[in-house]
Structures are given as structure tokens and as C-alpha cells.
Image 1 (cartoon, helix red, strand yellow):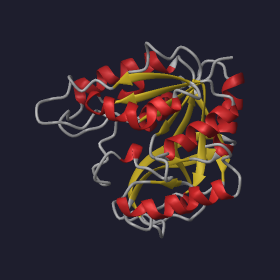
Image 2 (tube, rainbow, N blue to C red):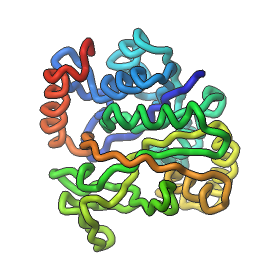
Image 3 (cartoon, rainbow, N blue to C red):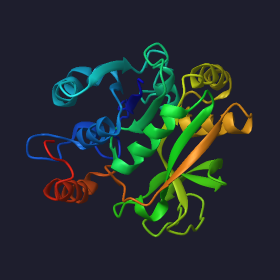
Length: 282
């Protein structure tokens, strides 16, 4: 059975200050994506689709894509920026990125951020779900907030309400500090609060739903600044009884590059995993 991993790699990386998706972690140039693809292929995924921007296509292929293509079937999707209003350079968001895959992805698939390290357990849980999922039976991996914060600044997380093993509500919350307080809303959370890191398992019926919601977004949003986000669309699918989302809880430590200062911690952790034998041959 074909199961695809879709990697969202078209982000601007503005807070990081560069093309953080391909920032080397190892001395031979491997980045977080190498670890994620390794874990996904080991779990059973047999195709990877990279969503990128046209202006980074050559660099991305040379620095990452061509190397990963030696391990697994790779395809590319360009997130269309020609529809952006004048003056806007940032793509419309993660839901639009996923929508751009509708002509390439015809099988169950998972989506991830290019600059996040999720751990092998997460990919195993999502893969097992997707091998049995019927249309509208989506999945997510729910991390503990305390394991997903940065000591170098605030982060945005999808704060989740999970009941009886299923997602009931998700709220994108910004400015979350390493003390689990949102400077944006003033809310205080516990370290065990469930959050989404954009690791979703989806079936292809998501695409017509995304199509409809994107048309509505184009008609009603402030196109100069608003974003069309995948957690928002999935929550709308839940509210409208179009889909249900099974939540797989995960206590692993997340690592990611939101700020340039995050690099040292990420390198130390992932190189430690290599030394411990978790990534033989990477």
C-alpha cells in the first residue's frame, strides 16, 4: 500500500534569517529533513513530496532533495505565489501548500513541517493509522507543550482539546514561552497541555474540502496578511462532521529551528541520537 509523506518546505524562515529547511546539522551537510525522512521510510512511507517555492527550487534540490531521492521516491510541488496580491511575498499558508498537492497525491498521506524533528514513534503511529484509515478518518500526533517550546523566544502551537482519543478543538496560539505562557493571549498552560506540531495523517478526500475553503478564504480574508492554515481547515472539517481526527499522544521531545539560536540544541540532540545508534547509516 502506498503511503506518502508530504513535507511543507516553502516557508520564508523570517525569524530564523535564512533557508532554515536546509541548515546543516551534521558535518556532511545533513539537515533535520534527513532525520524525518529516515524515520518515515523506516515506518513504511514509500514516497516523499516536497512543497517548495520556485525561487528556492535549485538550492533545495542540490542541498537536500537529490540526496534524499537516493533513498526513496521523491516528487516536488511548487506552492503557487503568482496569485499573491501585490506587495505580499509570503505564501498563503500551510493549507494552501497542501492544496497544491492535489494533482500529485492520490493516496493516504502525512504532512510535516520541514524544520521540525518529530521522532520515530510519531511516524510509526501515523503510518499504522493510514494503512487502515477510511475516507474522513484523519489523525494527528499530540505532543506535550512543555516538550515543544524554545528557550530563545515565543512559538506558535495548535492547542488541542482531545476527548476520548479524538480531536475536538484546536486553537492556534502564538507567543508561547518556555514557561508555557502565551504572551499573545496571556493564557497559562501546563507543560502537559496537548499541542499540534503539524504532523497530520490525511486521506485524499481532504482536497475537495480544501478547495471549497480556499475559495471562501479568497473571498473573505485580508489577502495582504491573513494565512490559510491547515489546523484551521481540519478543525472546520471536524465541526462540520466532514471528518474525525484520531489523536495519538506522544511524550517525545520535539526539536526544531524557529530561531537561529535553536541550532546548537538541535545539533547536540540529533548528533547524540546518532552516537546512540538510533540513526545508523544516516
